[in-house]
Image (cartoon, rainbow, N blue to C red):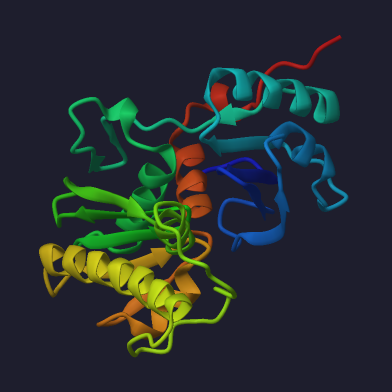
Length: 261
């Protein structure tokens, strides 16, 4: 990998900004404090707590659309006086090939998580991202993305049940205990967990017993104790993929954009 240093990596999702810092191309990523963005990612970017050294380049993965990207451009240029670079889902990159007929419609966070997983386990992998949505993707030994699934995450599932019913519920904060519920709250929690676990186990079965298993996302720690098989928890998987994306970029792209007068 050849990346100029240092580098700030940003993964901007539906509710928060995850950030990591790379001192150079080979150093482990350093996780920075996560910042909730409350529908204002550009504002959250301005609040990020960063090392004192200015980044030489900034790479961003986001789900914001064109208007959100323009706001990020402005925020980065205001703070650092250069433009950021953006990851995109593409048809093929570094040996990984998308299964999507329209590759640009694949979520960039899924693409980056797969890119990282492919470098970690080129013999094949199943990748799970457990957040607002629960996504699974399967990569074959030849680097072919075989496809995936998109379902509801743990909290999303609970809210969906409550929104579609007239349950008079109380506290839903308790964790899954591996059993069956004996009140409404426990039944909703257990049902959401079992749905997620079933989707993950089915994806792992489709991937095959020899595939490496990676899980990331905010709900990963809740799911891990109940998953079958040797799963690897990689909290920075999307950001790891973002660094590989930066490494694949042209020298011109790695320069980070022109300074403004």
